[in-house]
Image (cartoon, rainbow, N blue to C red):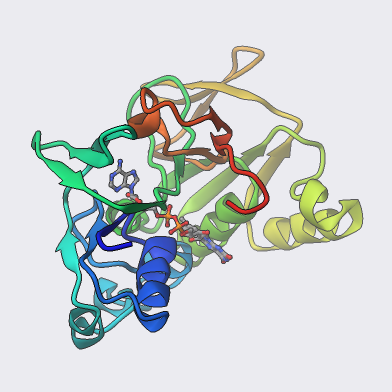
Length: 254
Ligand SMILES: Cc1cc2nc3c(=O)[nH]c(=O)nc-3n(C[C@H](O)[C@H](O)[C@H](O)COP(=O)(O)OP(=O)(O)OC[C@H]3O[C@@H](n4cnc5c(N)ncnc54)[C@H](O)[C@@H]3O)c2cc1C
């Protein structure tokens, strides 16, 4: 297999490229990513970056020289817009085509959103920096979704002096992941830190003043973070002929 193209320049795409080189692939290796940044680590976004403890310069997963050593055709800021399976080529947003003998799809997920404009999401370094900049003392932040991400942001935002309301549809946050007992304990920690936690509430939309709940009540906010899960980035594969479900449908051999 000579020309390998990897679409998605984050943790999975980068480590796939590294694994290919380690396994002896010495042919052309293209890594395509729609973000303008070299592959970077996302877990610190909701903690060290949001709190201001780290500059964004600490996020890259590899040093420049280690990336250079992979001898990649690195195409950042370039979205793949389509896949021609029969012609074995990836279509790019600029209209060009990148032919391949082997293709790796590593395009990850994007945040789910709510109807309405003006809410933050947190997936990229740019999202994190934009949210950090508005988390000033006294800012009223509504966080929609008390999963891991929403809970982390609520905690960090309190640390920055924001007034935080955390809205969660289930009766006990994170119960599905850690069980009701630990979920209840985490709720008490949020309350002890001054987070206003409201459970069993469903948010239907983002409004000009805040968010609207299913019963019609508007919870007012200066800033809103929607943290209600993610969707697979399979839009660019829609007409490819690949079987798509909640992601690309694979067999046990990928
Ligand atoms: C704030 C935050 C905190 C997290 N904390 C943790 C944690 O504590 N522990 C943990 O295990 N995990 C955590 N995660 C999850 C972890 O970051 C992901 O599991 C990981 O990023 C998955 O890597 P990936 O390469 O599969 O996909 P992604 O990181 O989603 O990367 C996919 C890349 O492909 C790009 N892309 C998408 N579509 C296209 C296209 N058409 N053309 C070109 N490029 C495209 C995307 O922009 C992205 O750069 C966290 C995530 C976030 C956002």
